[in-house]
Amino acid sequence: MIKKISYLGLGTMGSGMASNLLKAGYELTVWNRSVERNKPFARNGARVADSPANAVRDVDLVMYSLSNDQAVEEVVFGSNGILSGINAGQIAIDMSTVLPATSLREQEAYSKRGADFLDAPVFGSKKEAADAKLWIMAAGKRDAFEKVKPVLQHLGQTIHYFGKNGNAAAMKLVGNLIVALEMEALAEGLVLAQKAGLDLSTVMGVVKVADFRSPLLVGNGQNILKRDFSTSFALKLMLKDARLIEKFAGSLQSPIPALRVVQKNLESAVTLGFGKENASAVIKALEKEAGVEVKAR
Ligand code: NAP
Image (cartoon, rainbow, N blue to C red; front, side):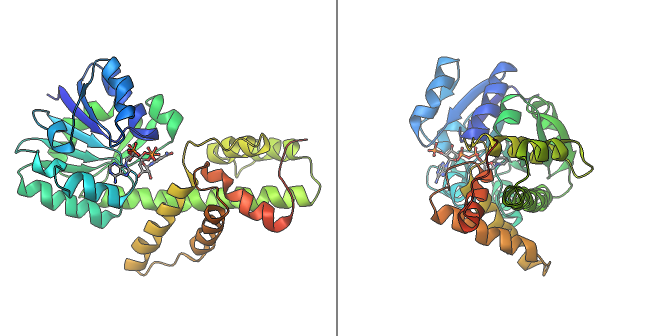
């Protein structure tokens, strides 16, 4: 039974998940590159480690949620990284959005240490992470998955098992392809509605109920009308994911013409300085081109 857990990477997603592990009563160790993010966890009873290697000693399970493949490279494979501290019998779960090829490299490296590994990225954002309502996908050995399932149940509302390592990471990219296109569709639609002189609150009234409705369209649409671009999923992370999708789809010769357009638009938004805002700020690049601002009257 899993009792002791380390959580590494206490950003938007990791902080919510680690808090829920503490609330669930696990003995928690945390590590974050910027040390100030450890402080609220220390105040709530977590042990703070001074390196990834030290964070994973003597725990049953290590979990991490890091920005990108490069961060995983440093925290897992780097000097004083997780791999230099992990031992046989332990389990590691990567909850970051990374290339399936990275998950496979992780699995190989962990197995050389006698440890099990699952890729388990998530859908949902800051609120779902904080409210333990994430949609989790997991891949790796079935018995390791069964051992960690009770832990994942404290973090998410659904858990889908995807079989062999890399498959959950692949599913995350499939989902994010859809998310990126949906966000672009919302932005283009709202700019067109504004240009056409439609009342945008009424437009959102239709988006909320019509057969193409989705929580993503409604939540982001309402925030755009309020000009609220506070970050729950940073635009620069969506661009990072678009580049991962491009690489992954390219490796399988799977066509992604629309994603290429979205990627260009995300790049423009980053160049304009909106990378740290929410991904919905992709609309700002279109607004600039259109010479309008989408706003409720
Ligand atoms: P975030 O708020 O930017 O946090 C990123 C975390 O990674 C921070 O703890 C950061 O440490 C750490 N980090 C970055 N580079 C590092 C490095 N080189 N070495 C060590 N630590 C490093 O990102 P997030 O929104 O929580 O996202 C985390 C992962 O979940 C990403 O892969 C993202 O694509 C994915 N995801 C995000 C969402 C979302 O809505 N936000 C939803 C689903 C999946 P510092 O504090 O030191 O910077």
